[in-house]
Image (cartoon, rainbow, N blue to C red; front, side, top):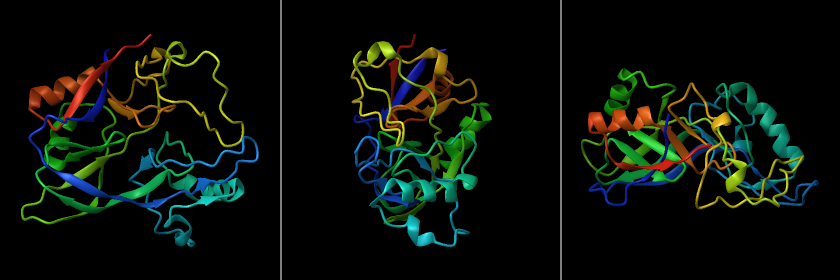
Length: 238
């Protein structure tokens, strides 16, 4: 099996642009007591999660940094609502993508390097190909045009890692309390074959969640069906 990174297609004829963020999210961490880092990133998102039943919903509405104890408390509030296989991190986002959209969109849309949207008809075609683990979640995007497409966000679980051979040899282990790795993604990525899932045809890496990976099956189905809007870049593995 070959694997590919999914990215925006800069040569595309499509002009669509999206400005928005997910409805809810966890706070970042301020001054971790173990490593003293302050950090948080929204590159892990779970758009299927509905926090409406949560009593203190305001705790999840404004991006901010909190002491790690508050972050951990809020993690326990949302954990029962997460999809199987979900992993949290400071700044992780939840719920539908909310915002504005305009322009012409392709069947597949990559508004950032860590998000992948798909038009409903395109998703149904991919699911008919029996690709594994493709879950489309509704968005709340406002369009400025008639005949606007219905864009769904793929829920991409964090699984799979880069091979140690492409990482700095003197790297430190992740923080024992907050999990921060403090690594810069290498330009020449090498996947660790022993960590790759057999039940997903599209996912994000667990250790570098800005990287969306798909299988050769996914790429072949998109090309056979004429589904464009993104680009695919082969990633070696070992």
